[in-house]
Length: 445
Image 1 (tube, helix red, strand yellow):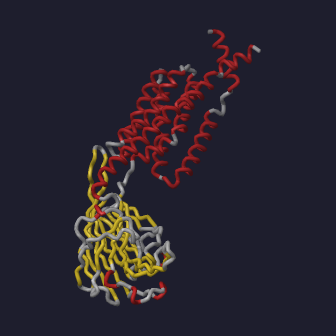
Image 2 (image 1 turned 90 degrees about the vertical axis):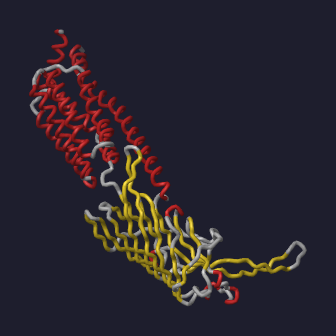
Image 3 (image 1 turned 90 degrees about the horizontal axis):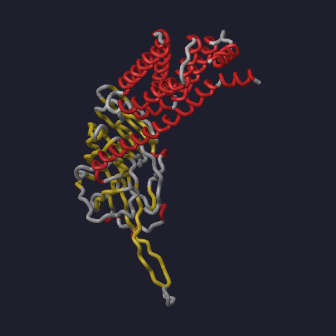
């Protein structure tokens, strides 16, 4: 019974180390929350910058809406038959829709945060090869072709920095004084009244749009044949959305990209009733900042438990081989230094490049650990050993952060290697004898 008591008493340190590791997950959780708060603060700063320039530039397309008279017979309260006339619209998408986009991004700052915004110009070409109403069963005399409306769609009218200059068959268009929001398939729209001379059998539209925005440019294919080209001096674009470029060329001087999208892959038919709604897709080009420090810091914190266990195990093994006795408070201080690594990384990476901030934080924590361990073990050898273990861990963590696609593989292999090393280092330790000797020392004391 006495031996069991001594064994349990000597095992308290092992249990205490385990409890310390669990307790340190509390400040780690607080740091995770702090990272989230800083990300939200950054997002608010970004939104305050891009909102005045129209936020993301979303060019949603152009269509021509042709009105027609719809006669309906109704019966009034007295039983009399009445014929009512209502104006409806048929919307026609282009057969060919081409956009040539040129964008010139630059940075705007708000406090410590910066975001890319841009000015640009779009050359627009669209062809409408006739307007057929046959499958709508509308009598020809009911079609009001001379009251047709051209609709240009945008997500935000702030996107346009000057009145668009548009020509149809050589005739310059004038803005409509009336808004037709009820028939537009777009979020926000600009309207042009089309004269009868413009609405010939085949309509050829050309023009330019001066635009602005922030972070993203979105283009929506709406025609039977869509061809988009884009060029910019931005060297780190991100291509996403419903379609990727058919051709792209990205260099330090900028990028060019080409999309060729068939109408069959979009949700838009050739023509439809204005009441119909769609859920369309767009192509997206993002002008991203090459390194997102918050994302990498957040990923590094996910490995915090592993990088708390490794220094504690190294400290315990050093304690065993050096035959020194380390107080739990000293374990606690070394663990606190490991936790502060993530807080330092978060704060410094807001002002310096992430790689440089990571180097500063890892070297600082390793030096602090080395000097402190050398003092408590009264030997520079054990301080250097602990410093080497931590620095190797930070190198391993850095490699994991860089290889995002292989993070799980690298992490699994690294954990396996650490386990094998621990098995090799502790293979000759007689743990029962160690516990008994510790129990004897406690009894003498």
